[in-house]
Length: 113
Image (cartoon, rainbow, N blue to C red):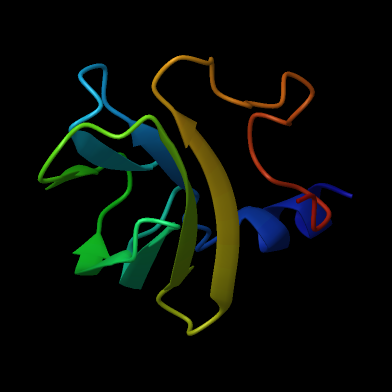
């Protein structure tokens, strides 16, 4: 079992997308243990897209917005060093708390999404 967990958690970037406190920036954080590559962020329905070549483990990057936003949905696509692709969606809101799952494991195991 230990070997199975070790194989699944190796080379695993884990990106999170947040809205800054002043609602003028999109913050991208890599909570995983590997560099995320070819990152593409789409903000729906704001019709804005951002690209980032790479974000190292424990790295943070901010994308500035031209004005404050009340809410949006961020679609984030990226891949790890081995070429495995990942895609996640995040709800961004200036007034509500994030939708972080309290039951989420500290590190992704067994294909948990």
